[in-house]
Image 1 (cartoon, one colour):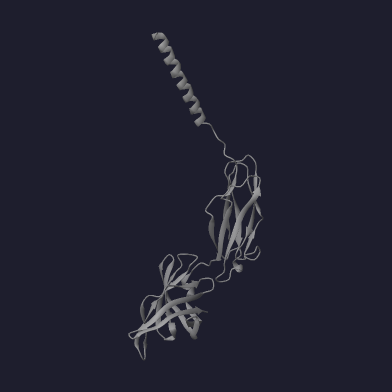
Image 2 (cartoon, rainbow, N blue to C red):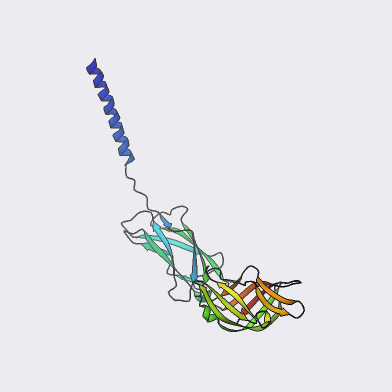
Length: 275
């Protein structure tokens, strides 16, 4: 009886071991992932087009597994803002080849600097459309926002500007008149101050701030300061209202501000300055 009981226990333990081995083998079974084409980075990129023939924006396209053969991936381009190939950008074609043994290559997008006047911004939508491998659902579209960019060299802003205009409620209330930019001082890697002589056409000088930290949003601001002595209301001060903008490509500036005296405010103004 003892022998039989021991034999039964042995068979039971053997069955458990065999089952565990099978389960272990099942868990370590190797699965080879399918090859699928996809954009490998975030779904939108910002391209600041510089005045250089070598300007390029690289859009990464990959496959999910290494292949032993070259893989061709096709794509299309559209623009909801009206950008056209040959006017705002160029491409080498509508497909790329990922070489055998690699999992990544790039669509090379070349922006056309002259195709971007001040204020123009475009969006391009790249869509993977086919090729040698299936597409990875949800990762087959990539958007690129394009706009012109010029390096900011603050000292280059020094000099006379003949077209200074003061606007209120979008209407010109004074100008054009001359202003002069001087005393340009760097205050950081992407900030500077400028002294503008004859701002508001009152003969005094006004200090303004420039900030180009965000390449898509160059900003001007005016700190609170004395502006001039009004013959009727006495000392007038100027202070910024939000921020204005400037273009390092066209050397144009706008400033948003208010002018106040002890008796009250003259209102909000925007001054635009150009050569």
